[in-house]
Amino acid sequence: MSVHVTSPTLEEVRAIAQKGSYRRVPVKREIYADAFTTVEVLRALREESNHVFLLESAEADQRWGRYSFLGFDPSMEIT
Image (tube, rainbow, N blue to C red):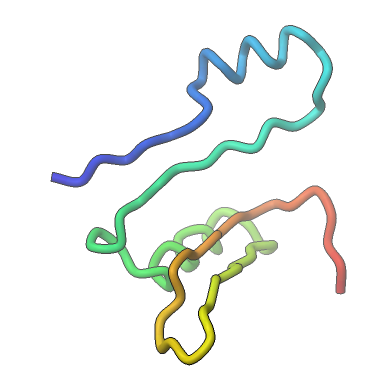
C-alpha cells in the first residue's frame, strides 16, 4: 500500500491564507517511486498545463538521481 503525504495540509494552507502575508503557498506531495515513473507523472501534469518542469538531482558517477521535483504553472519562467 502506497502512502502519499501532502504538506502543508489544506487546513494549514487556509490558516496561512487568512494571515494574508503570502500570495502563494508551495504544496508538496511525496509519491513513492514504485507507484509511478517520473515521466508518467510529468505527462499527467502536462494534461493540466502547458508549463511543466522537471528538476532531478544527480550524484557524480551515479547512474540514477536521488530526487525528482515536478511542478506546473510556475509563477515565473526563465528562458
